[in-house]
Length: 288
Image (cartoon, rainbow, N blue to C red; front, side, top):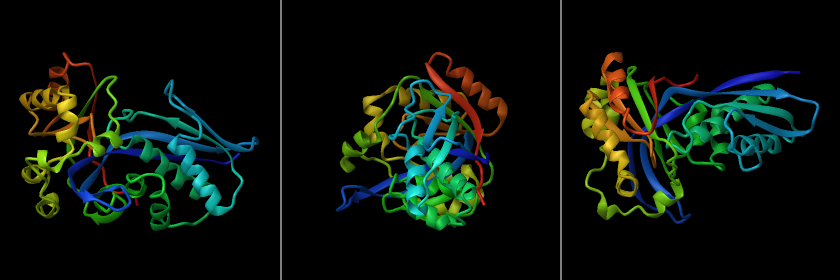
């Protein structure tokens, strides 16, 4: 039986702004998105049993029709008019419900993998347009790297890959934040600092030290008041030597930039009093 393997990379938001509410009910966003090398591994294998069969290493994770990987496989099968007989194995390392686009990255990997397995020959632009029906982060995850995302997240402008940056991730264990809840409760009037997307784009090539004055996430004004531990984690990371820390997406994961591995390890040690999942990772460029 034929089999393909794909890598699904996590993302962070270097800047996240909300410009207003759209007529379709979504929010108009302007974001700089960045891929990290924290990754899930997706293996898709042809099997004799008809259907889409999901299995995973995470107990309690739904493997049914509500799983984004399942939805992606069905979407492409319907598009290509193929009756699927496949098994999809999700070996997950990306933190769950974390603001890191783990589910979206898995869905994007399934689309890329099935495109190869079924010899469909679809380019990334077609996959991006198709995937927008399933979720706003999935189009970015098709290629990843560094991109400016507009619309509801599906209108993408490729930017040059940033110089490699060491990143520490910390997510409070057991804390899951509903993206829909965060956006529903967003109030522009509570925002003190918005990201300067224009200046951020112009400074990306100079590395993260040059970018941090222009980076912020307006969704912190929703998530942090309800979960103050996020602010405590940010403060601890900065005190331990990070030169910048910010919540990713709707949260609750915090990412911090640091200059060397020793500092990254010091940050992990400083977080020992928190119940957190942690990882030391790096930024990664676009998937060609």
